[in-house]
Image 1 (cartoon, rainbow, N blue to C red):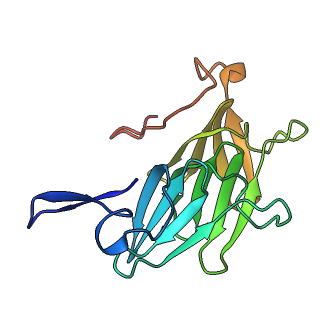
Image 2: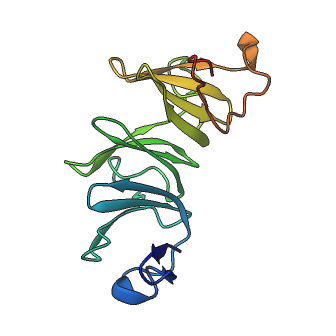
Length: 178
C-alpha cells in the first residue's frame, strides 16, 4: 500500500484505503515510488505502473498487453528512474522507456544474438551517473545505454571487471568511482 504522513496531525493514513483517495484502486503491492510534479509514479508487483494525482485521486494505469508492443513489457514494475525526456521502468521481463507525452513504451530485451542488447531481462538497478550516462544493473552484468544508437555496452565477469554479474545496485562516489 501507500501511506501518507500529515505533520499537522502527527498521523499516518493508508492513502489508497483511507481518507480522500479511499477505494480509488484495488489493493496494490507498491515496489517503487517516484514523485514528479503533481503526480506520483507507482511501480507495483503485478499490477503494472500507475500515475496517481494525490490531490484529485485521478490515476492512469499502464499494464502489459500481449497484443500491444507499445505497452509495458511486464506488470512487475520494480524500479523507476526519470531522465530529461523519459520515465524508465525496470521489470522482471526487460527495461521499458515510457514517453509520458505519447503514453507509449519502448521495450528493451536481452538478445543472445546481439552484443549490443541489454545483458539480461531481469532488471535489478537503474542509475544515471554524474556525466549523464544511464546504467542498468541486471541479472547478467552492468549495461550502459547509448541513446544515439539505442543500444547497450555491457560489463560482466567475463571481462574480469565484476566479481559477480548479478548487479543489484549502482553507486558513484565523490570521485566518480563506481
